[in-house]
Length: 329
Image (cartoon, rainbow, N blue to C red; front, top):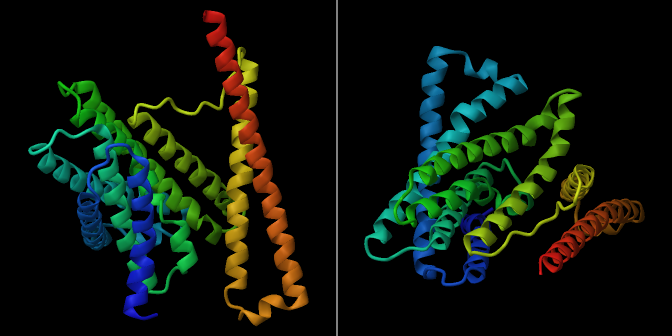
């Protein structure tokens, strides 16, 4: 892969997603400001990488860190105390610096700070893409699929930071909300990384990998909900019911939809991995074509069932909302 194509696949998918969110937000800051934040995000990625290398070197002088990482528990501990805090901390620092700088000249909205967070996170993703693709440790398809992941991690503290910095006065409860949201991001970041490598371990630990894409799907849903909240829109409610039994039933359906939809995406990714070494002409061999179509159809069935469950839950919640509103009037 040439340097130009490497830069293209590393930077263009995050930039496309940044432009998408830019046009979705009313009264968004200028695209040039977001591009500057994107660059700051890439810088924060290099800073985080160097901090992780330094910390790993220092830690190995005290304990045998490589030996700890042979177990999934050791990997989870490293993600919680090193990778998650450093990466989320570097992104947070960049957003705070940029926000404080622009706040001296403009009156910022919470949506602006939230977009700053997305821009920094996507810049961080571009830097990470460049590292993975340079060392050929991940495919282009996997990096494209993972484009929104860092934005999904950072969304809680980006939302809380926007509420805190743009509130008048800056209440202490909002400051505590930023800390709690940042810790939430660290835990989610660590959990995703652990689930993504669980398949390397023997059974039953390898089954944890089937929770990765359902969890990512939920993180994406949370990002979208926070984006609605920060714009003053009411969140989309899926869990409704007048009794505990009804609400538990709908929570179960939400979990089922996440499992089906997430693992439908996971199945398609696994299929792409299996087919990637083949030449284009080989894809049309009868046995390979039959295998491909069968697995695509199976995963599409799972995805359609998940969408139907989502459609049912949303319609049910809307009907109940209008019933309550009508009864009150």
